[in-house]
Picture 1 (tube, rainbow, N blue to C red):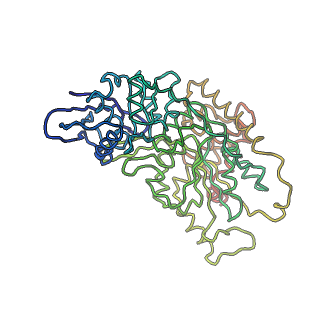
Picture 2: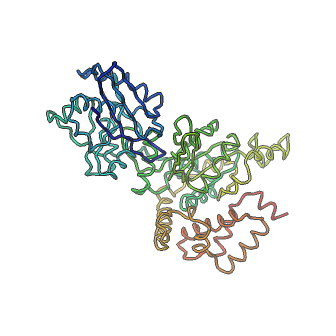
Picture 3: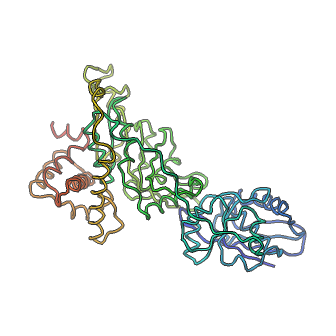
Length: 510
């Protein structure tokens, strides 16, 4: 007899249907799994055997063949345990054979018959709902699956026995309920930062328009302190953005206890991170830090200390908003529309340009250190800010009166203007000025006559690339939104140009 159970294989954040076919026939006792399964799936035989025995069932002394179709699709992970086990139980009559037809099943089995949590439950639930089916998943993942739809049937059993009892009607399982994450601890506040008014202004602009930001300054000038306060002025996630990042976190297995939070992600990997850790990859092509910071912030502290090849791998995702991980046997795409915030010292010793300090290596120290960053990467960063060391007099001043909550109000108002503008243009997929393509930017950020002349002169003097030209316009449009202005003027263009790299301004002065 052949029983069938539907489960899924993951390709990025997409869930592809897999048909688990269980065939029990007379012959030499044997348990075989076929269908391009990896080591974790092949080992499921022993877990299933022990789990069934612990549940009071025994494998029949027959030839058991499990086929995971389509056979040419790679099957990876431990979530195939439960569908295979339920297929076997249906084949031997432990549960009704037709009970599983309307469900997608995934879960890992423990040796005592309990069902352990697995990654990817939320994308699987969304895919099952789109196909008009319910979902059977581990108890620990039930609240995560419940976010897919409030009406879809979801079973979240604790063990194989609970599944059997449910279908027999002796102990019906209740539908799990979605749960929100606990309120986060109070975020660090901008009111803690004394001095650095230019950097605070740049941080507000970056938050309002979703712009990339680089802060350069000596040790202790407050670069990391400022960056860690950016989440406190960013708006909460919209329902669509929340769903996008939760699906990525679910695939990565980092969606703790199935709880979803509308706080924007803030990821700060160490500078020793590998390319696979930052961009994504590995044996099973997992999402990297840039995907886990989708719709949020990726903070790279000590930027030149990262491997140059790793940094340059960010260039394409920064433009396209996604990352493609190609392997010999499959190709996976993950969303990666992140806001890059980076911090660095001006040189190896960290004090280049500090009044009263002379480096023994001269200008070569700063030149060699900053040369670790490629020009194309710096060209993709909208705001470049130089921070000076904070003096003792600044530290003895009273705390600033303006808090993160005050700045967040202005940021939210500017973002709402952008959202309404893009909806009016028939582009609801765009959310911030930084996301807008060049054609749209030239339309929404067309400066007045004086601004146009200034931008033309500055572009020639600074030798701006086409990308840098449009990024100046994007920042100028954000400045106008913060000011509540309908059009971009000379004042906004001038301030936007002031945030270009210092090297470009020095070249213009020469």
